[in-house]
Amino acid sequence: MPLRNRVTPFGEIVAVAARGTLMGNRGCLHDSSRDVTRLSARPAWVTCRLEWKGIRRSLMSPGKYTELFFLDEATALAAGHRPCNDCRSERLRAFQRAWAVGVEGGAGTATLVAKIDPVLQKERWNGTGTQRTFVARAADLPDGTFLQRGAEPGIARLKWRSSLHRWTPYGYTDPQTCDPAETVTVLTPACTVRVIKAGYVPDVHATLQME
Image 1: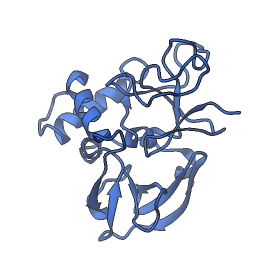
Image 2: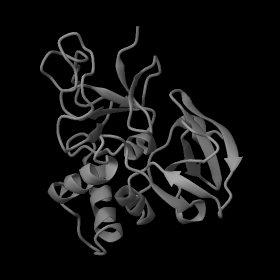
Image 3: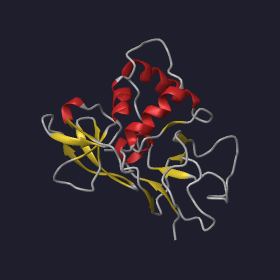
Image 4: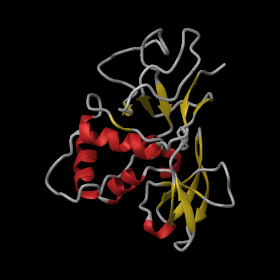
């Protein structure tokens, strides 16, 4: 039986057999039986490479952080994560520079993660512990943003190259034409949407690249 360690664009942690392209960390979320008992244990939610300096980990070791997995970076960003400072430092620098432009209105600087993490923490969850969303026109969202249509409850779609692609744990499917005037519910945190608008392009799964 697969472990409950795969993350959806809704920020949920589920048990599926699919292998992701990125690993993530929210702190230690599991108990001694390797059951996830909470959704967060620290403000900094990061995404990491699957391979780094030959390090091998035993999944969900007692007292260690819970290894989470994502289909791709776009999924991780929708769930409220950012790049890791160790194994994905170049991507983090690009994220920090785009944050300075898109969120803070500056240029030529890189915002410190100490300023980024509290904002992400606030904008990814609401006071009831569920994902914080907002409403926008599809035309106002950049490629790399996850959204939900009113007629498709429970279905997440990624806006990419003028189409809306349905997310599954195994890849993207069912591309549909994006109506620019359509009003949608945005899953990706508002601050991260501004980062993407400022030039940070999320990595996407190979199934999307083939469509």
